[in-house]
Image (cartoon, rainbow, N blue to C red; front, side):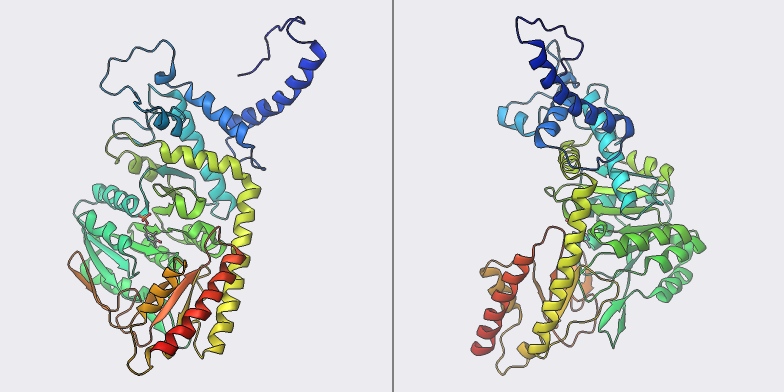
Length: 468
Ligand SMILES: *Cc1c(COP(=O)(O)O)cnc(C)c1O
C-alpha cells in the first residue's frame, strides 16, 4: 500500500521524519509504475522486499482474498493448508478461462494481470537476447515435452488429414514422445555424419525427399531441435525454415535450452526472417533457473499463438508464472545478461580443459560448430582394455562421487520407444564405433564445479584403467 494521499497527523509522527520515509517508498512506487506501464524487464533486478510487496498487492486483487467474498461456486480457490497458501502467496485461481490460456479470469484480476505481465516481460527478454522477429510468446504450465505435444495437437487441428511429423533424430526421449503422445506418426530423419569433425548435422536433402515421397498434404510439420547433446549439432534451422516456407509446411522448433546460447537465438532469428517457423518451444527451468514445470512458446505470428492458447483444455496452474515473474524481476536485464556471459565463459573453459584432458589420454573432443553448450569426449582407450568392463561404469563411478549430468554413451545400445527402435540410442545415429561421454556448460554452472569435475574424472579414469 501507499501512504500517499493520507493525512497523517503530527501527533503520530513528526512530518519531517515521515517525509524521509515516504521519499524512499516513492522509489518503489516508481518501479511499480514503470513496470506496469512499460511492461518491460527492469534494467536492474529488484530487491526481494519489492518483489514480495508487488506480489502481495496482485494477490489482493483476486476474489479469494477479498474480505467480503462469499463463494458459492465449485471452485473458489480455497486452500486448506496455510503452508500451501503461503507457498503460493495466496494465489489460488490459476490462469486462463475454460480452455484458453490467454483469456482473463473474472475471479482473479491479480492472477490475470500477473500472467499477462509475465508474458510481456518474457517477450522483452526474448527480443533483447536476439530474437527480434518474435512478436509474441506465452508461458505454458507444462514442461517442454508436453508443450511440444500441445503445439503438435494445435497444428493437427488445422491440418486434420496430415499425420506425419518429419523429425530430425535427437536421442532425447521426450522429444520423440511428444510426437507419439499426440497420436501422430514420426518419420525419423537420420543426421549426416561429418567424418573429419566427428559431429552430426541435419540432412536437409532427406527432409525434401520425404516431403516428396509422402506428399506435403500428408505431412503435419517439420520438427527440429536446437540445443542438444554433442556431438550432434543444432539442427540447420535456417535451411529447414526455408524448406518449410517453400513447401508451405508448418515448422516446430524444440529450443529446450537454447535461449541461453547466443548463436542459437541468432540463428532462430535469421530462420524466421528467411523462412518459416510456427512455434519455438523452450523450457523455463533450463533457461530461467526455476523448478521444472513450465515452457515458453514464442512465435512471430500472433494468430498462431492465439490458436495454440485456445487449444489448451481447461484452466492452468499459475505456479510456474509466479516463479518466472519473481525470477525475472529479481534478475532484471543485467542479471540475466550476466548469467549468459558467465555461461559463455564457462563453456570455453570447459572446452579447453576437456581438450587438454583428451590430449593427455589420446582421446578426441569432436568439433561441433553448432553446439556451444554440450561437449563430447571419446572413451576409446577405456573400451579396448582386455576383459574390459562396460564404459557405462565410468558414468556410475562419477555419479557416486557426486558428479551429475554426465552421460556415458556405450556402443551397441538399442532402445525401443513406443514401438520404434533406435540403434545406438544416445548417440543420435545408427552407426557408432567409439563410446563417448557428454558434459554441458549450462546456465548457472560455475568454474569451481568444472574444476571439481576434472579432479573426480581424473581419479575415476585412473581407477577404471587399473581395474579393467
Ligand atoms: C529437456 C529437454 C526436453 C524435455 O523437456 P521436459 O521439460 O522434461 O519435458 C526435450 N528436448 C530436449 C532437447 C531437452 O533438452
